Length: 381
Image (cartoon, rainbow, N blue to C red; front, side):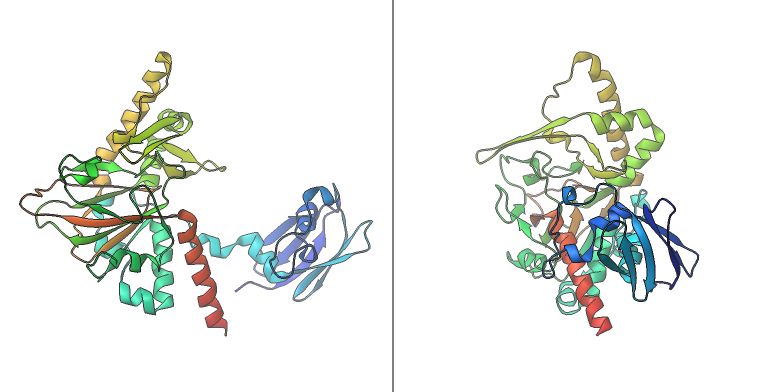
């Protein structure tokens, strides 16, 4: 709940509004920002802007600001119009408390964690029937990058049923879903029984799949354990240990390629991608899919040294969360954050069958946001 407002005022240059809250917090809103967000300049139904930035005064000035709870009323210099901003809306824009709930929570020492104790688990039936439980599960998925579902029917359509509660499935050359099991002469090593090092899937696609789900239809009693690591945490570990290596991996475009009888895919991206603030926003690591790098000979030494450092960190057992999914259990993870792998198994003796799919990144975030709005409206009703 927001605190009350003590006062509102205008800076001497009339270029910003200052709001003083009862809890001692102080917020300042630029006049050009306020002018760009006038409620009356938005469509009443869609909420979309009716004006473009070139329609605004280049340097709008605030003549006066008046507190008229639940609004702040603004009179503009050289304009006859009066504008009102809801106090609740101003507080939300200043502090955005809802956004903090979705901030990534890093987990570096994966070997110290227990998948069943330290991450979110929920039965499929509960996710389908309880909005609060599903909102909590989705929120934990976005915070931790990984979450689990139990009691998913061991049928081919089980994963499709479960994913209607999570996001939208992205169809690829593998179809809506794909089967992960050993087969002779596989086009992809995922379809063998060899162990797989930590990696992210499909960095050769544009866009890269946002989330991945794997549903265990038949677990191997010996081997085939799932491995996971938080790529954001490992990347930050590298940044602290070797800033130069970290920087090298953020600025070098790496080519990824996948060829099969049904697909020929190619994309270039850095192993570590940053957002505008310099924080890690994506990790793309798949040594099996890296094509020959178009690097000048003089640049190879620095890149490969940095690449080797990252690979070495991903080999360290202390960073790896290991778990064995039982029949009917399903894991969903952020494919641009959480790396996954597995230990080897003997398919001739103990067959292992997982069914997987990819989900669009925005749809998972949208599902959580929409559900949050619905739950909040139910609480307020």
